[in-house]
Length: 207
Image (tube, rainbow, N blue to C red):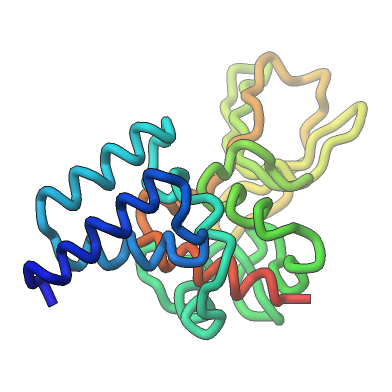
């Protein structure tokens, strides 16, 4: 509404947030309402709350709210259609998508809501086995960049090129390598908090 009365109500809800008495299920809705209103004073209070939580992304300041509630149908739309997230460029679900990242068809049976959120907003914190981008320098001087798909005591299997092809590399030939890095960008920096919450709700139901 962007009226004086609606802004007083939002300020009151921010007071409850600061006091720790606002129910987590309302956190993301409050963020959404403040951002939609756009009043500088209200926005500054959100930013102050984020700093207080020592969060480098707004969604990280509202972890409890991001794993509570949400709209699964809208979350599916984010996964399949959002042009910023582009989830299906790397992930498959029920046979649709790519295999650069883990298959999401039953991800809700594998990860908790909190783990799903962490995977989205801090993708490098825990990389699924067999996935992650590595840089390898061979003793010959050649450089190989790709996705680490498999590793044994004696060799690495790296997916390189488009379309991706598996390349086997003997560890004895490796001069230097980087640790695996997720190819997925932190979604908290490119999606709205409510979109992240909806995505958590949708993925948690995939079993």
